[in-house]
Amino acid sequence: MAEIAIEYASGNRLRSEAETARRLIDAYLGDRPDVDRVTLSPSGESVFCVSVEGDRIWCTDPREWIDAMEAVTAARRRLSELS
Image (cartoon, rainbow, N blue to C red):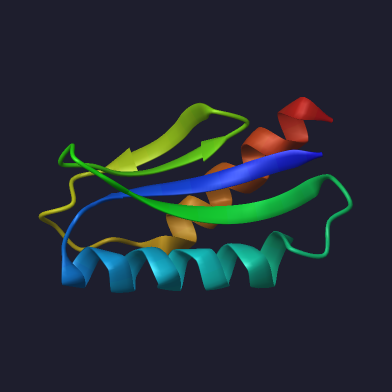
């Protein structure tokens, strides 16, 4: 089973964005048998990334608007590659 991790630069706005991305990933992928869980973790780096099984699959500039649906699409694509 795969673990999906969301890593975000520390900051109030990005925590909210990360929680939104987690909810969307849960909503779109949470019922898949190959998804174990979705985690959030703050980072000392200036990043906003999604990883599947420890491999960063999608990153964006955290200073710009974050499209959480892009994160869902990237996670779905990576999960299909692992199957």
